[in-house]
Image 1: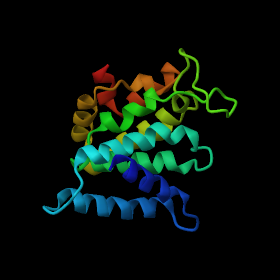
Image 2: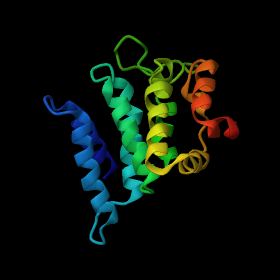
Image 3: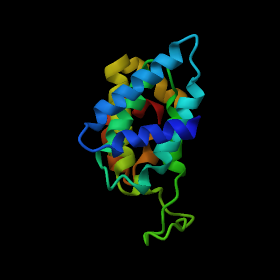
Image 4: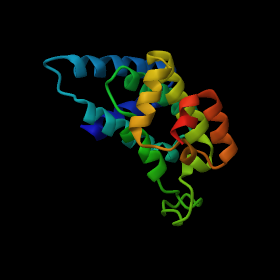
Length: 179
């Protein structure tokens, strides 16, 4: 089910003429309805798998749709703050993704290479910052802090420059406390 949901999330960004955020909001409504229904066929693990797959593959097409990272990140933050998903399974694939070797030939990157979304700045600035802000907006700073602590992730790994991680910790004090 995860691959199917990941494809649906990606499709929300492929349709021209309709705001991607609006399409993703419609998808979120259907998913939340399924998650909370006694007759629903979805569970949190399936949704976490879907967002994890989406985030893990985002580097291969984010240049074609630069808003996708921020919009999807907001959805992850909101769904996490509402208690439907956890941040770790959704965001960890960003850090595990391999580069394409820069030549567009699909070869995996070198062993010491930064994950592509980290190297481009998208992981920290567009994804992590939006996930955390959406979680704060939807559930408050304490809820966002709890979600972050339970994720087992380190904010610094989403940035290629330490100063950028420190700047984000200035916005979200719980990141500094978690270090």
